[in-house]
Length: 184
Image 1 (cartoon, rainbow, N blue to C red):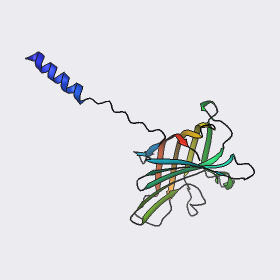
Image 2: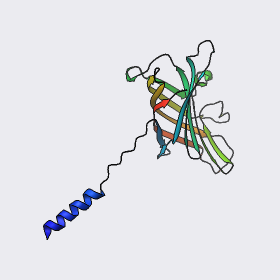
Image 3: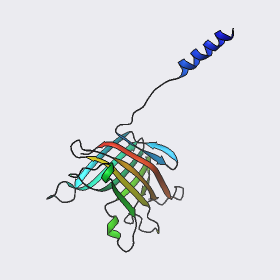
Image 4: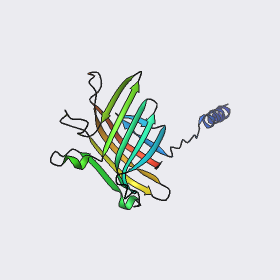
C-alpha cells in the first residue's frame, strides 16, 4: 500500500511540474516602484543631430505596457560597435554650473487612462520649479552596427509634471534592462 501511495504521489508531482520558459527577446523590463514592469512592445529610433554626419545623433527607446509608456533617450554614434569591454555609460544628474551637459540624456514615464495623464520626466527643462529634477543612468553594453540592435541597463527617478495632489511626486525605475532592441 505504501508503494502504491508513493508511486501516486510521485506521478502527481511529475505531472504537476511544468517547464514553460518565456523568452523576452527583444525585451525591456525593470522594477518600477519595486514591482516588475515589462514592456509589451519596444522600439528604438535614432534621430541624427547633424545631417552631415548621419551616424551621430540621439537614440530613443520607447516601451509600451498597456496604458503605460516608458522612454529613455541618449546620444549614440551608430558607427562604433559597443560590447562589454567598452560599455558606454550615460548619466543625468543636474549640474547647475553646466546645465547643457544633461540636455541629451532623459527618461520619462507616462500613464494615461480615461483622458487623465500622469507624466513623469527627468531633467531641469521639464522640472523648472523643482530643486530635484530627478536622475538617470544608462549603460549600453552592446551595440551591433551590422544587426542594428542595442542592449544595456538603466535606472532612473523621474518627477511628476502635473498639478494633481493625488499623484506621487516621483516614479522610480531600478534594475532596468533592454535587450536586443532593434534601432531604426
